Length: 287
Image (cartoon, rainbow, N blue to C red; front, side, top):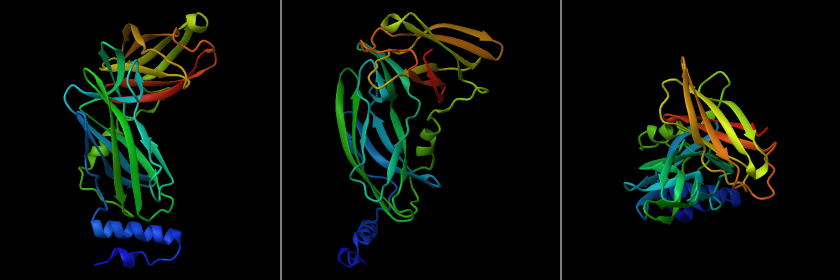
């Protein structure tokens, strides 16, 4: 059996780091499909391995929640805390890209929030510094869970990836949530943005957004994000009209809570349009 001492006889920092990872994979049998669960208040979290793709290694940050508890999207809405992902302690990792499945809107006494109940997997694309070599993915994961009260949670998670990791997790776990990540919108497909208009000036103004959905679309919603220092309330649906195979839904967004010096004209917005379990994303500029 290979020992840790023998494994560390390679020369050079890169070779030593690579050999150390290979030893860990051999000695601990963790060329790894999942990390251990880390329990927190009414929730638990782990990392799971997905497919090794031409774009990089797909993994997922898997969160399970107790009944009636929720966690938050990248924009939590009127209250809440977005998840924070710190990958700095990883080895042989050049970059990571966290993706967000389409969220849901929730109403409670604190206002309207955006997030997930029951469980969520945040798909993550990992690019290695040295392709074809093992990688150690280390995540400090800060998130919040909320029911009657909101509680911060934290998990330190490690996933060891061999050169080509095969997973004994059901293959559709990460991919099923990857399928819920908003795709780029198309001008020829539904749903899509039909019109963005602004009435009034500055913080006295409001936005009107018209979205086209399929006539039989269910669980439709719209989430709008502006510049980092902006607060935008969740869009309020004002009308819904069906015309043949399509339906037009109009939303209104107040600008009253923008920063005092904000100039809305010409600012770019990100729109996430949800239709059932699928969603699209596109940008639009305030006229």
